[in-house]
Image 1 (spheres, rainbow, N blue to C red):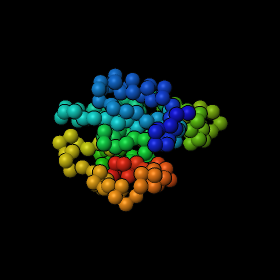
Image 2 (image 1 turned 180 degrees about the vertical axis):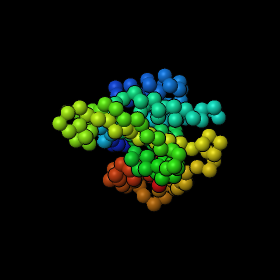
Image 3 (image 1 turned 90 degrees about the vertical axis):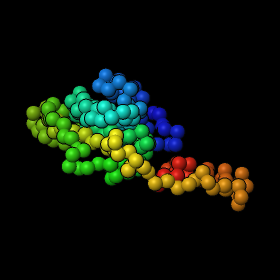
Length: 193
């Protein structure tokens, strides 16, 4: 098992590489990173981090969602976020959901079909037939429109303006940082909340 440097979710790199390869086939150069963390149950979910470089990139996130939901049976969640969202922190993904998703248009349902044995609800739906029925997945476009990026600038504390050495020794600062939990250390480094 591998871990993100800040102690984030464990993930399996070869699986992320598979999703990245799919993304490169759908939209070359569009995807920056891929998260297939353990809570997403291996093939059960994926988060793509993308960078829209030009106006014509708008809509590629929908193509990516359709490709992901249509390529893997049993996929429950596919999410696309912008490059300013850290895909390794659940708090960041929730922030993107809350601030960037219009539930009426940014959520796409995948079509059902044959399912996977690891999904309990699909096993239950199979009943005596023992053939798992895939009910479909959810695709979430949590990106901002290319022409509206300035409206979605994140609020940030001015952490780079504070000089703690005025009040604490280097050893005290090091001790305090060592005692911080991963998420709070990240907040202190980036200024995001």
